[in-house]
Length: 134
Image (cartoon, rainbow, N blue to C red; front, side):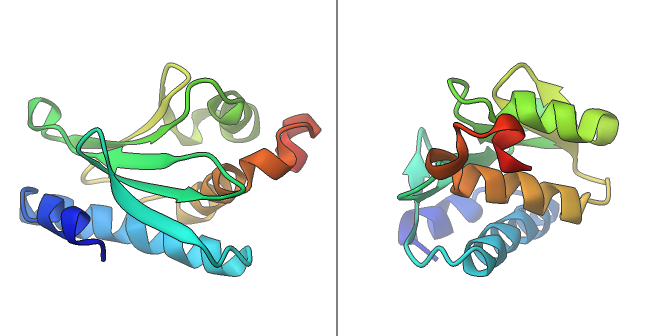
């Protein structure tokens, strides 16, 4: 784990660490399955961030002011959230065209989330395809 990201994880409550660690594991698993060998882990805007050379940045965070939830952020200038809404409708809670919102106590829709992450990690190669090739 990147040292800055590791430090950021120490600021989260223990339940948040468990849930965000699961999201992080999904990101790395999907990257491996998609053959993405260069995945950069860093902090952007103080949030754990993941970027592949062929993709769009994925960030996630938990904000104390919204203690019962966390968000996974995507570049708002992409078609990612629009595509997720089309593919998965009410499976997710959306924040505009930039984030998926999750309650800390919910079971993650892992299969659907993994697909969304895959689309983001490969975005530059698939952005011209209808529904991003889904």
